[in-house]
Image (cartoon, rainbow, N blue to C red; front, side):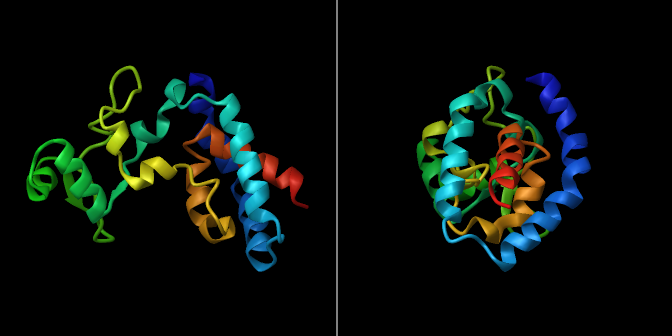
Length: 163
């Protein structure tokens, strides 16, 4: 798995233009059954991939924290939301709450998340490959294939399946 993670940025870069063209076409004319196809590809891939072997998303990026996330997680820590914000978050250039540091503060050395049951929505939904109207998040997907082996494989299988 570590070799895969190490090679992923280069693989994604090599496929970037191809993927960009594919997603541009997909945006213009998505197949009627795209959501169904994506759900199937997503489910198939996550039967093979174990995120605990990788955790590259947690090691290389941080999620956005919504107000609901902040409320839920601060409650978990028995803190006021502002205390949680002050201790763990900062506001980024898009005016969103994100982690102060990467890798994620809540990631253990065993790749387990210490707040898994209350983790942010962005973490629960990552890599977003089973999202409805998938064609609308092509820019996000182009970024995710460079850090998530599952997202990379899903996109490659998607290109084979959707001509």
